[in-house]
Length: 214
Image (cartoon, rainbow, N blue to C red; front, side, top):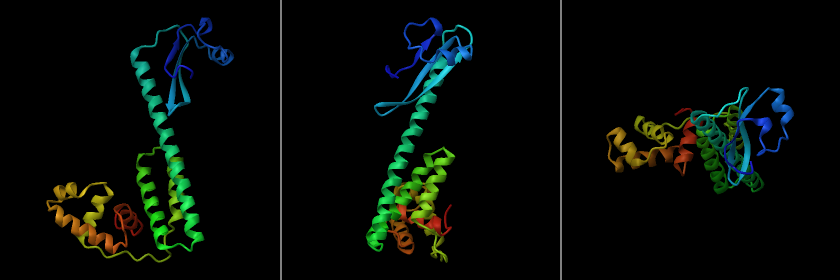
């Protein structure tokens, strides 16, 4: 943790380069060689991954690379979780402000856009518990109406919203559907108007709530 880099002890009990604070735990598992790899987030170490062998061994490059990769993936999950927590906190504050001011349209719009952005962020989260929390916050901020009337979009407008849900730009949509960018822009604008959305994120969120796109 101090060196912020992978460290290995071929003969753990005899090593003079470690603290030996965990000798009882290590010897209890009959571990002879130990590899430690830190998961670094920002300026700090959030976790340490260990690989142990019950025989004296020099850890090969493949083992080190795979453990380093696992530590980097874990650090990424920590980073995503922290970002989710930050955005959830902002959403809660925005929701509280919106309720206190009787939900003026501008603040309500910001909450809806933030909720849609949070949903997009959930695409990179792999932790099931974290995904469930994101979904719960989204439902709390934007509860489904008791009687939802789906906007009537034309087939082409549905195509546009589907493409927007995939994160594609107008030029990419035009290429995928064989249309001009001007035509795509017109369809997107029409779909957003029918969905009462002022941004692409909000249009996708509204279409998903209405069951128009998955």
